[in-house]
Amino acid sequence: MASGLFALLDDVAAIAKVAAASVDDVVAQAGKAGVKAAGVVIDDAAVTPRYAVGFAASRELPIIWRIAMGSLRNKLIFLLPGALVLALVAPWAITPLLMAGGVFLCFEGAEKVLELVLPHVAHGDSESAVDAAGDPGTLERQKIAGAVKTDFILSAEIMAITLAGVSDQSFWMQAAVLAVVGIGITAAVYGVVALIVKADDVGVALASNPRPAASLLGLRKLAAGEAGALDRALARVTQPIGRGLVLGMPHTLTLLALVGTVAMLWVGGGIIIHGLETFGFTTLGHGVHVIAATAGHALPAWLAPIVEWLVAAALAAVFGFLIGGVTVVVMQRLMGPLIRLFKKPSPSSEAAH
Image (cartoon, rainbow, N blue to C red):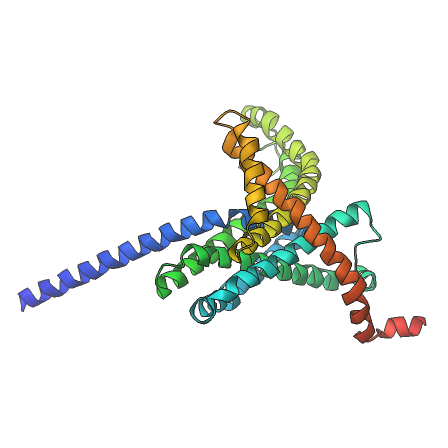
């Protein structure tokens, strides 16, 4: 009886070792796949903060939370099962779908560039914007819906890139890695986004707090009293930091918007170039590689990889802008009139006429 118990414990220990090894494999595979999707992650983190700009401070974190939940739903409920089914029954469809998502990213990025230089060229639903302007709740819902829609494309790219990185693994390993990457990237991206959008509030709190030591940097409320020596010493550091955050965040958000736009073009253009290579059209990808390698060889060896990457990303962004620009024109000249033709006029517009 005792020997049977010990044998059972040995079996349990062996199973536990296998399970631990499997967990380690999943984490390792997820880490490798997450690195490959880093470009899209940067895009996601750079694009999302703008959806919370312009709202009351009390609404910023709830908006980010709802977008994060929408992102997680996109990844785990829709994209993960879809990716696994595609890998099983139609693996040939993954690359075309990736390229379609790349075209969408190029369209979004090119539209933002055109809005800056030619505001009348980029399309926009001005009527809905005007309607929403008088209703903060409607505007918030529209912003969240737009963020989740954009996130769906970015999440699809992340999941597809992840799947491509573990295409030689078993079905259950693929599922586990996709789940780990989906949850991990969502937590990381929207955690960073929450820090970004609340940085100005943190700055105000630090700049206006004369007793940072006694209040634990504002984490607890204090009764009225004089600042002690430690408070005065620490305030010389925290108050300038707070003012710097307040003054710097508008510029940081502007820079992030620029980074997000460039990342859209870079990621979208790169996906299309790689997709063309998959289908045998290698001239464009080979040209980008040659130009980037030439630029890298002209510089010291320690700097060459960085320059090669930057040149390749810049060329992909230029190509993405060209693709996006053509898509904007097509959407305006062809799809726009068709949409307006079949779109029912709103009661407000009928009343205006």
